[in-house]
Length: 523
Image (cartoon, rainbow, N blue to C red; front, side):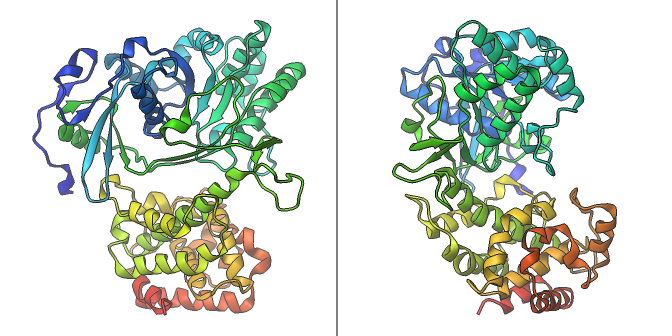
């Protein structure tokens, strides 16, 4: 791609070279030597560095908040994380974040919120020391959905995991995030210190609830009395996070560094859009998040969720306020992403932004949003649904993000059960038109064949399919396709007529292509 051409000379990044950096890079206006740790973060990946670190950087820029620096922790032992520790140390924990707009314009920022980065397999006691420091008020997490160690079928915390077993038997020498956090809480309790808040920043529904389940389950297996104290005194706020932050290949790292005239060992690239909706539920104080753009949700706290003031959490249908924001994101952003990913794979399109260059695809997703999705969503307070949908589609047109159709389409079997289920149910019960939903399901089943419209074969990444189910998906059988688990969430709503229409669209996709089929259902 021509995107990767630039001739700027690069400068090494550390405290001594800040004054030599190009003027195009925004740098911290605060004195980093005065910033101390108030937050310990597990899983210091690109998303967190382009998200919470940015909010705290804004707060530090405002002055008077020097006690809210971050110490990053990595518990997974591998050479990549060892090298990351060395890279952060070489750069005095500095890094650059480059934000790209949809039109290709960009701005680089030097982020100075990190105080330290600890590699737990080699420095476990130092991790426990910072966790038990009175100044540490929050432990934040981006450990991915799988990192919470919850069995998808039973919903139980997996105590049989070897590292979990190790930590229960060796509490003072932990390997897992659960072992470190619970041991630190035990030490704080014994010392008479207030507990820290455990704040998930993962892109997971009810992330605070997931964290509560994981850490209290581990604690119960270790010490019932300690677990009761954690359940009573430790806050686990739910949140909704959003920012597209791609993984950077070596080529893209080199491009960003040359563009900025700097040799950053750990650069981050992100879109301009940034959102965080967070329950105002903390054990031991918090930064002034509301002053830097975070949407704080307050109200009645019941069973780990914040409900609107004046509401009755016991009423049927009552849900925590945060659910409304998560619901909008799932129905609009995530569902649209899946349409783009599957259609792109079928039409041999590499990147998500390129799918929206095709008029038929863009018109189709806008029709789905405007006619089949938005009319059935209740907007959270302050959210304009039409504007949110428009901005979402615009975000996907950003070529700098380099988001591939193969990545987005991967694990579609699991994703659509969450992202598409309500849209499909509404169509099948007569709440909305059905023809575009029929095409969506046809796209999904054709994608699962692993064969493009031109006949070319591609590899599928569908971990939710058993070998037998994978064979059903690949043979393209119109009779057996609806037995696949991607329809589990709507199985009771499927009709013979719906299946017949979906299969007819599958045949048209094979004979006419995706664009023609999408165009046929726009009127």
